[in-house]
Image (cartoon, rainbow, N blue to C red; front, side, top):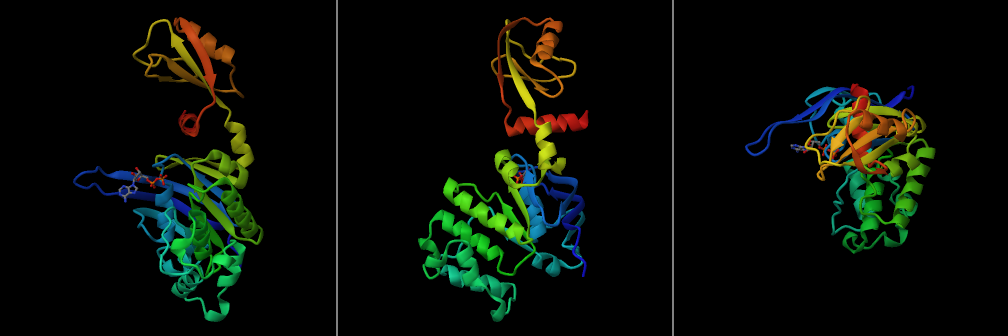
Length: 313
Ligand code: ADP
């Protein structure tokens, strides 16, 4: 059989969480289209609440979509749910390890759940690959947090899925362990495994991913090769304190402004398109008098807002 062009493809994917007595309805995914090329290391980036976990939970079969079509390795998750799920391994955000198993037992149990025949199991190989050989027979509760996380990666790989999904894999993982984990992920990718990882660290995505999609509020803001995305992330902020505190952000044609608690405001601009000079000229033209001014690099949230704004305008 031909290998699929895309490891994962979502079309018009929508998820609405119903309202409860205490919470309103939430549109977590608003009809997103995403195509994840086979063989890529694909970063799914977005601030908290963007919809990343919802997307992954739908792929993993932990959450039902409201509408849209999803295929994993060309297998429709509605038509062939078992086959679709057999093509992915998911490393969840939360560490959920059974304290009464040893790592080797945990891998055997996981392989059993995927009906991997004994002759095809490779628990020891996986333990070695993740630096857990000397803990193979320890109780999981005796492992450090980093070891538990590596065990979760091994568990996700017991059935040799062609796609590995890591949900916020390095939250709470120290630098050395992060490096080890990434080395293994890179090795897997070289061996042909498609990697999808969610993160809210742009830097992490920059270093590892060849393609990045940014989602915000349930919508895909951009999806492109990392190199071309980085070129567009040239947003800078100018922080302005006017002589008189303001109660609303000023309107400056061509720039996005935001009121600050201090009564000042920030103006974001793109270094590739405008200069601080032009920002200052726009402020002066609006009749405002500047008391003080500074610049700052944007955080990821600003980048999302700016890209969303650029996409909408
Ligand atoms: P992310 O992983 O990017 O932080 P999530 O997918 O967890 O985002 O959340 C997207 C939105 O859906 C958020 O507004 C969140 O509050 C909401 N949400 C997530 N899970 C549930 C749920 N089980 N019930 C209701 N709302 C949810």
